[in-house]
Length: 158
Image 1: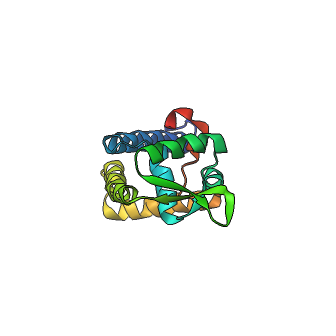
Image 2 (image 1 turned 90 degrees about the horizontal axis):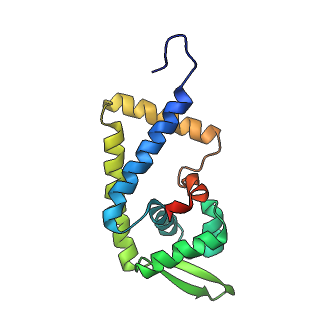
């Protein structure tokens, strides 16, 4: 909804929707004992078992020292195990624990709820069209659909 005769506001509205969606996701994962940053790291580790801390930092677009703190929190919560890589003892392998895999199931539910909340005003055809357009825009701008780049910019996400 752009004002007649006014400037195009699509980018601004997308930004506002992104903020709304991020806040809703944070609300939904908080009862699970997770932050959005922790949820994002768990998702990456679920898809890439044995990833090193350095590789996780690269994937998140974050400095390694921030990822050490994040992994410390995941390990303390019992969601991730950190073991020396037998092929390169300078690196730690990161793997989900049984509790981490169970958390992934609960995270899936939170993500589905967030999606349903955000898209509730649209019918099925509109949802499909919006999804296709947003995916096309993300691809055109080189945005990784699996990583929330805001993690690198917001220390409070930990």
